Length: 337
Image (cartoon, helix red, strand yellow):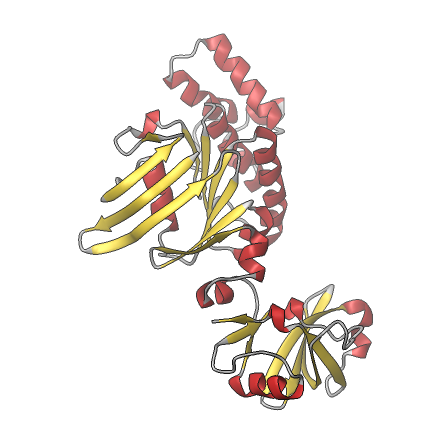
């Protein structure tokens, strides 16, 4: 569907994108993830046509689009600020693009009402000023305005970053539901790892103008290819070389203490510790406990090594500071670099 082939983007002497090669499948919810300044928004803007690559080709369905104007690329856009017209009501915002394309009045009305119904905007909301709507309603208007023109592709540049945490979580579900409902190829830009993991079919993790890894959320999280991806995605326990040597000796496991090693808290357990199930079992003392609502982060000390895991609050009395536990994990869950 979408191909970036050997894309380089330079601004004077600064190379924002080095040598980008990426394919996005039709109907995918694909996320460009990374810290600020890593090149993800630059990549998105090159697809839309706001930036022209210095080298390389961008293709949609096999057609090179480098020289095609923005308005002819059939790409719908939802921005961080939504970019709605504040002096217009919702109906007028939705109708604007259709009117520019010289649609007849009755066809404009039909298309506006149809898209409003699909994104759950009612008759009353249609004739409100956008400034009178909630953040969630404004987001639906922004998406509807992009979709009413029936684009082949929808791009979303950090559309939830201005909202509070509770509303962000709610709108993630709505946004994913809408994307699935329309079946439109969507490219989503974010620096929020949780957002990327919960919403995406696949993710490209960016760092300093390069792609570190492309994969499903599970592949990115469980099988991080680089140390950057490992540390950028979710929490981690860094395993000291001396600890790696210790478990190699005591637990008779194959591990290279000279490599950098990490294990995710979710891969560490203290429940049903069974030598047949886990190849590393060590005793540790609880030194810290952080309350996270339905769960607590418990930190264990094992000599010069600290390891954290998450425990549900229903058995929190079993995890008091100073108590000792047997800690178990699989060496196959250790990420090494």
